[in-house]
Structure formats: structure tokens, C-alpha cells
Amino acid sequence: MNYLSEFAALMAVFAVVIVAPGADFALVVRQSVVHGRRAGVATSFGIGASLLFHISYTLLGLGLVVSQSLTLFALIKWLGVAYLIYLGVKSFFEKPLDIDEGALASQAGARRDLSLAACFGAGFLTNALNPKPVLFFLSLFATLVSHETPVAISFLYGIGMAGALIVWFAGVTLFFTNPAVRARFKACGRWFNRVTGATFVLLGLRLAVQKAG
Image 1 (cartoon, rainbow, N blue to C red):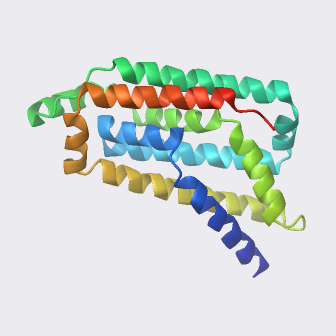
Image 2 (cartoon, rainbow, N blue to C red; image 1 turned 90 degrees about the horizontal axis):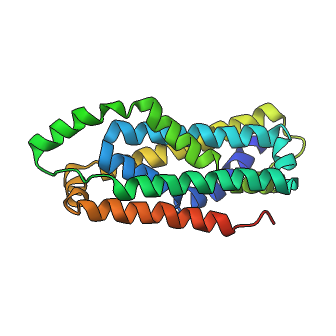
């Protein structure tokens, strides 16, 4: 029962964190509106896998090494900054989708080169190249999980958290791929691309000024 209370405490804190808009949210929204439901769900799984990646190396003790190494922390951070700005510039200059149904079908076929693996990878990288989860999970597990809790149990906590994150973003995907909602965003045409592109760039700049401490 102690394990259940620990998990409940972790999920209570984590539930507040996952609904806060950030780079992951912006990416899922964009993938869903531009590339459709399957792309949004694949991106959600990529983000969930990255979260589990963060939790795994935190539990193995590597997270402490990253948090204590300013050089390693800075390297991951600047890779993340570069990737977010790349996504922003790419989104800003991408051609808008036509909301005409025939054109949408044609463009959907043209966009199949964006495979589910690519969507998964985009979600994974966007989350993985943000060093802040290292500090978050170190503090979260140190505060709410007993040092007597086996690593295997803590890893199960992580699987539950990753699953919750995937469910959340899958829900976001379902909302933004609703035909009426998606059509409204597509009606914005080039402005949707510009706004989402600027959002990624701003998120990248925000990450650039963050410090390890």
C-alpha cells in the first residue's frame, strides 16, 4: 500500500506538470493539425518514450551526473535550443495546407513521406533534448519516493507516468484533429505556420536562458 501512496503522490504532482503548455504541447498540436491524427499519436508516443528515457537514467544515477556537470548540462541544453529553433524556422516557411477537401486528400498523400517513425523521433528528440526533466525527476523522486523503494518499483512508477503523458497528448491529438477544429486552424493558412514557428523559436530562446541551478 505504501507503493500505491507513493505512486499517487507522484501522479498528483506530475498531472499538474503535463498539462502546462510547452514545446511538447506545441509539437503535438502542430503535428496533429498539419499531418493528422496518426502523426499526432506517434509524436505522443515519442514524447512518452523520451520521458521514460529521462526517468530510467535518473534512477540509474546518471541524472545526478548530468545535473552536476555544467558542461554536459549545457551541451544537452544547446542541442535542444538548436533543435527547437530548427523546428521553428522549418514551420515558419512551410507552405500552408489548403482546406479544400480534394486538396487535403492530395496533400495527405504527398505528406506520407513524414513517416510514423519520423513523428515518433520528433517527439522523442523534442523532449529528450531538454535537460530540465533531469532536475525535475531528481527532485521529484528524491522528495516523494523512499530510498527503500526498489528500483524496479520506481521504474514501474515511470512507466505509469509515461503512460499518463501519452494518454494526455493522445487526447490533445483527438481534439485538434476534430474536423471542425482542424479546419479552423487550416483556415488560418500561413499564419498558423508563422505562429507555431515563432512559438518554437521562443521556446528555444527560453531554454537558452535557463540555468542548471
